[in-house]
Every structure is written in C-alpha cells, then in structure tokens.
Length: 502
Figure 1 (spheres, one colour):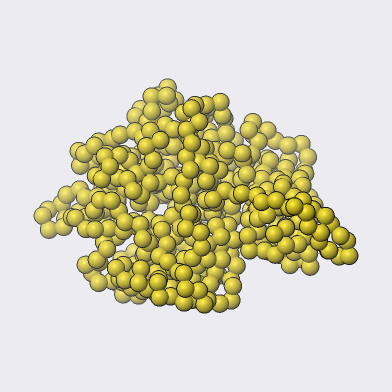
Figure 2 (figure 1 turned 180 degrees about the vertical axis):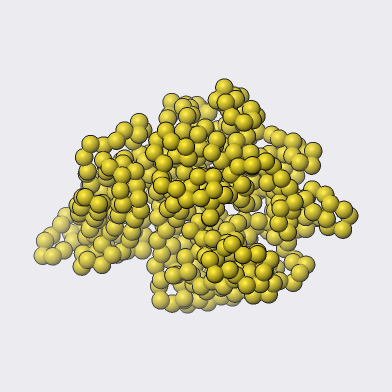
C-alpha cells in the first residue's frame, strides 16, 4: 500500500506497512547514579569493582504526556492513567474503577501489579527520618514522577503508608493467614503483599488505568541452549541461576559456594560469565527482573518459585527450616546507597510476634520487592514486619535479544568515531530504533523534535561510557509527520530526519 504525503511543499511517496512492536516494553528505572556498597561513586569502568550496575545501561526512558483532561499517557507502555488518586478499601476498588469517568472515559480498571510497577522510579528516596513517623523527612522523594502524577504521603498514620492497590492477588496468605493482594508503595519504593481487609483501618490509594490489557504478559521461548527468550520484552535470560552447578567453578571463588552472593560479588560474577556463547550478560535492573515473576505461582500454592516452570530455580532451606526459593539481586541501588533492590521468587519472610511469641512468617509474599544490605551478615527482625535480610542472594542474568538499549556491541568494543545512524525502520509505525556510537565517555543526550522544533521525546540524557547504543522510540501518541532526532555530547552534535506514517 502506498500513500502520498505533502510536507513543506515536497511530495514524499512511502510504502506503508504495519510494524509489530514488542508487547511488553519495560520502562527504565530512571536511576542515573552509580554506587559502591555505601554511597554514590563515579561510574566504574570495565574491570573495576561495581561495573555493570543499573545506571550504566539505559533502557526505555520514562516519557509521559499530560492530556489536559485529568489523564496521563505513558508514551512507552501506551497505557493511560488517572493523574490523580483516591483512597479506599481494597474490596471497593473494582466498583470504583467501573464507575470512574475521568477524562470522559468509562473503561477504567484496577491495574495489575506489573502495570502499576511500570510507574515506579528509583530516583526516589524514602528519606533519612523515622519511617514510623507521621511526617515525611525533608529529604524524602516519591518513587513516581510528580511532575505528571499527583501524590501525597500517608495522611492517617505513618508517612510511608502510601500503598496503591492492584487486582493481583497472592495465591497464598501472609502474616497469620491474611488474604493478600500485591501493591506498590510509591512512598517507600517497594512491592509488598497487603491484607485485603486492613486491620488498622488505614485506607489504600488507587490510581486506575485504561488501555491494552496484555501489558505484563510474557511470551517465553526455550532456545534449547539453556537460555530463555521473552519475545514480549525483547530480553534473553539464563535458564539457570547462580545456584546451578553450571556456575559452580565460578561461584566457588566467592564468600559462599552455594550460588548466593553479596551485591558486589553479584556484579563481579555477572561480568565474568560467558554462557551459551554470549559474553554480554548483565545483572537485571529491578523492573526487568520483576517482569519475569509469575504471580499465579508460589511455594504454598504450586510448590514452586513464582516464575514460569520453563525456568529452573535453585531451592533453599529458609530461616524457618522450610523448603523454599531464593530472593534475587537486581542491579538497582536503593538510595542513598547501602541497600540494593531484591525480588523474592520464594516467601518474603519476617520474624515477629503476632500474639503467639516471635515466629517466622511469610510477611510480604512470593513476588515482593524489598531491599537488602549490600554487605554484612544476614539478620532478621528488621522494621515493623521483622524482615529477614539475607545479604547473600542469588542471580539470574539477562541480555538483550537484539540489543535495543544500553551497551549493544557484543564484544563491548569501543568505537573509534562518533556516529548517529539512520533510524530503522524508516518510515515507521509506531516504533523505531535510533542507534549511535560514542568513542569517549561523557554526558550524552538524544532527543526527538517535531518539524517545528518542539521537543516531543527524550530518549537519553545522562552520562554514558564509550560504546555503541540503540534506543527504541514508541510514537504511538504522535501524529504522522517528519520528526528530527538529535544527538548531543560534550564534543559532538548531529541531527537526522525520520518519518512517522499512520
């Protein structure tokens, strides 16, 4: 099919066609600082300790459009959100969503845990005050973009009680038999299992969503070489984790020999792994790792980890003496630096007294996201839910199928010159990939403008190591036309044109 389009007095004939993009685009965490085990540091170089962490890989950068009618469009996921929120009991959420009319729309729904987690940003900071206080400390920063989304800290009890509801129900129970759903707390940057009927009477928050209902659905393929491809996200994973005997000779060099590692060891392990013919494995960031959780599974309900059985997951004996599955490290640091994000594929244990003496309980559920210290010795009894903090967690590695984000040269070779390549495909609908090379480290921005010079998207704006990069732009919410994309570094600038046809 051909279309003729008039731009600036020039007739352009283009062959239009449908381009199927990935169904489950993971929004980057937003983290742009590097850390050691305690604090922020200058970005480490290959071969140096702590190399390969979250800030050194750039994914689909967060991008939103305020539609001016109380709705916000996520330009990466294509989902539309309410700008504001309400407070309610979890059991009232479905009815509240079905009667919502924000922006004139009547098809609002309660989000899934994966939809809601797409909004979290790890530029947030819980602050240095007492989390049990009713007043947030002055250095607290919400884990959501408050330039687009309304937000408030907890108003009834603790300031960190800003837990948002989802329709994702835990297949087991938490605490002492509580029916549980998974929610995202944008005040303290965590996913936890919360009681469907809250005993303290503190309300939950709700922000409803509309749009594609297949967001968060994986499409796993076993590649037959001990790797698993998720065609929905464009990521490839190791079928095994660090506890598998395949990695025994490597993990034997670390503090423990069972595959559990502290955070620095996890990064070092990742940088040294050559597996299934690939050398570009990395430690997944928090959102990437959360994307492969299967919330229909749990140790109690399915006698398995909370992940598709296409993967193999090491088993452990947990602190309560039960057969269980590990938590896994991510490359994402939790501000201000001494903790990193962990995802639980087994029970998320705590140790506390619920009236029958101190005991271990599954306090947050398989599928929770918490934090662990990067160094030290395991402890339990931390915080109001008595969190178990293992310090030594497991690792599952990831790489890009056809690298579209971050360092994308399979040999990590450093380019000799600056270059900005023509986007592909071009023309495109609705997404395209822009790639470039930078031969030196430096501040780098890649922005997209419409034909009259208005900025419509920022794909990257951060310090990048020398390397070859590619970024995907989803123009689902833009109109047909000519767009300009511009690469700017400390010593180089170049602009090219591309065409969006709908």
